[in-house]
Length: 311
Image 1 (cartoon, rainbow, N blue to C red):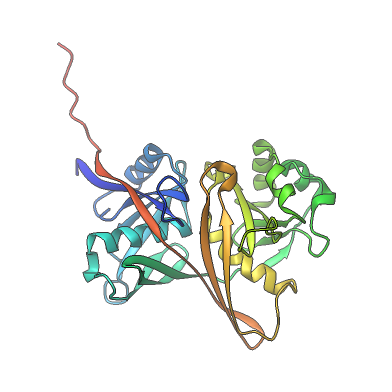
Image 2 (cartoon, rainbow, N blue to C red):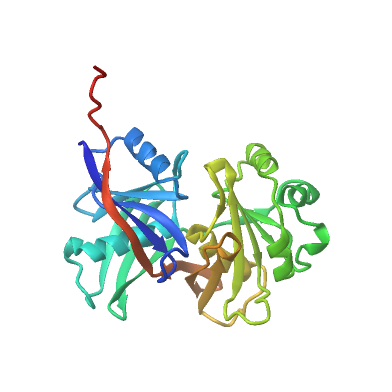
């Protein structure tokens, strides 16, 4: 394989050059892991997603893999939205406008249920995420605040930082200004990763800045994965709903929640993502993220260029 078709899709937005850009390869069959990593490094966006034939074709529709510029990761929300936007755009799997369709997808995080629906004749994608388990941050909180460039007084008085079983650390701050002005030290965040196996840091506020019709604003840092600050992080915004539920921020009588999350405004790429959560018998039963995308680049990448010998 000397060339591949590749797209760049801005996810969690319908406006070009906003949201989170993802590299998308809709047919990665025949590519090695090394090729995928090199392609992701060349694209140099937070994640590039690759679609392949499933290992079990009787039970699943396709398999997907995600790579940052430096390594493969277990899950990426915005790039999954971008992939299914591209598949719908190309009419793959018989996808047609205003014809909803569902997929079972093999990933390193298990099987994802992905729904492609339509809004204003454009794809609207939603899919389930694994339900996270939260536990207290296992170290001195002042060390965490120092790494993030926060003062402890800026933390929420209602809940202390917590971590998930997949290595995300959630830090709730009291107001929008605290989120806007924080200045993380990437080297210190990497040291916390080494110390506690934390792959990402989600700093969040439910303060809507006095005007936004959103439920929370987030900033997400993952320097150990090669991503200093991610514009919009689906895999972090989905669990945020569970974080709010488990820490008493939500009405315990309700069984169904929808949220709108905002991210990316501090890196010049504002985007929004929707989160849907259902409750059964007092526990979170499912979480989904959903959103729309727009393709900004569609081209061909050369993998093995023929370089003439020097005369």
